[in-house]
Length: 267
Length: 292
Ligand SMILES: Nc1ncnc2c1ncn2[C@@H]1O[C@H](COP(=O)(O)OP(=O)(O)O)[C@@H](O)[C@H]1O
Ligand SMILES: [Mg+2]
Image (cartoon, rainbow over the protein chains, first blue to last red):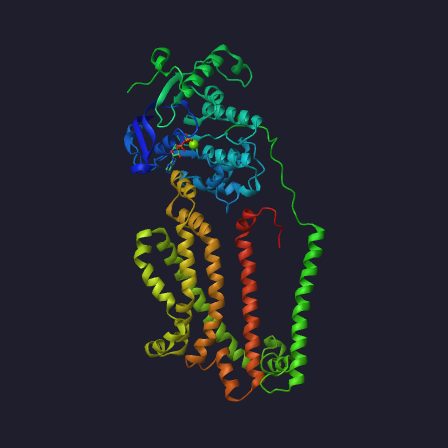
């Protein structure tokens, strides 16, 4: 579905140049949910923006279903990290969710229904008539998640989507994402700096190094399904993975990795 | 999404509406103060003018009486307007709103096009700076020679004079659109029409409205100027000429008062519309302001 091949990106030029990505390789299979975890400032958002065609990377290639990304791909939705600036303040919450659905070939009633359903799913069923700025940060973030879900993309990119919601809502939203992909075949790349979360929601966890980001490790998450917020997190496998990724992200024992990680992606 | 994945709505608290009693009292007090100040100034004017007995400065009561006689003593069926008012107000206001409307439309269309293209804007910028520096009344003689008919001269003067605030503000508003809004529009593949009408215009609306309001005030000034200088045979500016030629001082003051009242009325009505259209903008910047 998605191939990231030796992707590098440098912001600026000359003495101010900052290399954010230092050759990232990643393959995501159709229907997979991959968590990308890395320290803040390492280049996670840059990676996601490159995949979305919003940043033209300075090196490497990105393929979606074998076709090179050049401009914004079709059939893609993004939940931006800065959710509050991504919603349009002059539109109601419902209109924000409906707006992209027009080109999905839905008529007015169908659009309205799809928006209502998505808002309902994120627990904002009665907020459709409100404006984004009337909602708390966490609620705005859920609106932006609802917009992406209603769109039913085949590739969904999420940039720290649960960053500013309270712990309880965060767990609900994690489970919502797991449920969504159970129902619709969506390939999901979820960026997070929360290691627990990356393991809990992911089929796979890709850990990035500090900037310039490279893949430090790529681990298969082999936990018995369906996941449960309490039971899954106590499994020895979960605890082990979490520790493993923690070490990867912090960069310790990085030299030992190739032997420890059977799934390390090689391109 | 099926109901199976629905999550509980525990965190959605509605915000209480904020329209409380004490605020209403404060508003009434403020309105009374405003009226009081106006009344005091008018009373002072009346008193001084009567004491001075200067023909050039008739008292407000005399001015109002003259205005009533000239314009507002008509039959009930004509909304109390006299023939004189009917002959002169509609042409002026028609030209004013016609010119203003056309200029606004042109200013917004051009402004969006220029605002969305930095290259185009950079090339055209010197022209705009030159164009807006030319005082519109100086063009009246040229328009007179070129266009000959008086209504067209006035329309051209108004359009030329009022397009600049709209154009410049629209360029500015359309240029600085939040990058994330742009990104969002791209990612979700919004159509060109959606981008224009649902993203660019609303995002630029606060700036555009500021330009529209400025140019509305300008258009009232320019309609009078163009009627005074443009060889008009009717209109509010023409009335001023007639009053002047007859040494009708109260009549001249009447035109001035009328123009002031009209300007106030237009501005207030415009603000009313602006407040509705830009409610999101006002409340977003300060969600705690109440409806004013
Ligand atoms: N538009 C930009 N111009 C210059 N530097 C940028 C830009 N965007 C991000 N950066 C820099 O690139 C690095 C990686 O940023 P980002 O991808 O946002 O990291 P992350 O999402 O992992 O926190 C940071 O040091 C950031 O300051
Ligand atoms: Mg980021």
